[in-house]
Image (tube, rainbow, N blue to C red; front, side, top):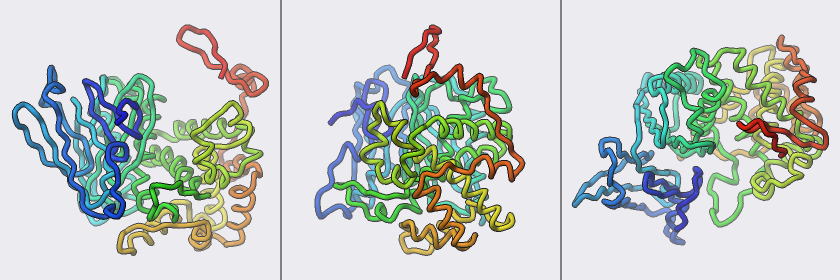
Length: 424
């Protein structure tokens, strides 16, 4: 097995860290995918050498048994099926940890765990405070959660960044500079805001991907690609809501939020491909284009994360406008989540027609169809400026900064710590 991929997708093993997704470590047995599965993680004695065993922890969303025999640690995990097993990554390493609880609308407490591995000097108290506020804000909005407990797994690295959602956990990798410092200011630094946004993004996916998901991913065949034009809904809505919830929870202030929004808008306007590829096409082409970038990607296509977030913003503001301030995008999300809870498996798969059915409950259906035609299936320029202006927010262009940072022919300049310039 290849276990040297420093990402959140597969597996990584060295002298300090044992990390894995069972998608990369176990094979499905055809015809037995729905049978219960037991997995044993045996940690060799050599891995324990020189480590503080009080900090040597297993981080995993699954409950586990722990046995130590003859200097070897062994952990036992049990899942209801193969599909269940592969939704629980694990990490065994020296880790710092804190626990916190939040309450749903019925005052039921939900236990959360946060693990942090890798070299770092993070302010764990500040991290606990901010993450708790963000998670509680989601519960206040959605009323309850599709899990009884939740686990954040984070590895602090030099410059790697990413996250992957799971049924009751998330696996994160972040540059250690993005973690809060001991003297972190009241308004989080730009770097720390990025990490909090990552936590917020993956946490929301428990509702908006793991519970409500594209219909082709409800009972997915893992041997084949699952094509859907709705990734802009799931990743785009999430990329809009993740930063919004940072300010809704009080972790950042409104000027900080508007700065984050401006970054999304800048990225959109700097991508010429927005005029050639619709957001629905970007979603459908994810398997062959998004993760296979080349020199022409920015000229020929658009990210369903970036444009999806701004389509979500425009839809949110359009809902407000068409409903005289009664409804927002958050009502649409909650309506789908309510539907999911009524099913026996507490999940729901949706398609483009379902989007129209639910959104039509909150604004005239003909207005949604026009919006979808122009901005989802079409490539018309998003009405960002007009919609923001209608809500008292104006946009200004900084032509000098643009001229300094962007040169002709689509080249972008970045400065290295040595003050030399590289062109990407």
